[in-house]
Image (cartoon, rainbow, N blue to C red; front, side):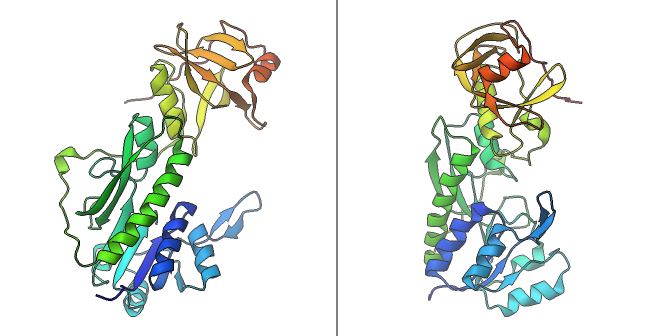
Length: 315
């Protein structure tokens, strides 16, 4: 077949390399992004990165507030002539009637090795769970949550020092390459059903996911910090005061969970349920981040000081 005409659905900066890779080789007949939102202290109405880039490229743009029951938008997608649609971090659930509009349906770039880590935050949860390998899946979208058949899949080893920021960059580059391959091979790709019995889930993060669990082992504390680096970031409490911690790494030492073991030029060493972690920076609320030993000196934190031990509410 000739190169398919593509509709692209995406919103955040993560999707920009995917959009640009497709635009370089295929005709994009419509870009769909979420509506503009108020941003910053001035609450200035700002387009999502994909919408802004589509405007720069002179591509047709739609930003519907809702998709379900939106006959006007469904008509626009149909009249665009799109033969296939690609979604990448679009951020809205696609209703069933929309999925059948393009001839070849919707392809989704999902940042995990499905059926592992279905859901909104696969990058973050793969790090929190301490995975050594993740990857990208190009799947045919159905009405389930990342349950459609797999068209292409490729592994990506996770470097031990990567946070969610570095992993997102690597996966965005991988997704850009794989989606171009998938579009180039339509309709010859063979869909492979997922094994639902092996599915795991990656729900959207909440603020509490960034709270340090000092009773966990040091590696688990560091892995969680890597996973929440973009948002909500790593949060600890000292005498009820909220602190953002940065640059966590596994260190030598044993003590009571949350106990400060050492304060030296390398940072702050804090005991966990097993082992200890080194903290490089501390940011008190409404202040800038500081080197941990500088903060410790100003806050009167000495060996033996204990951070509050927060426990998740499992009720």
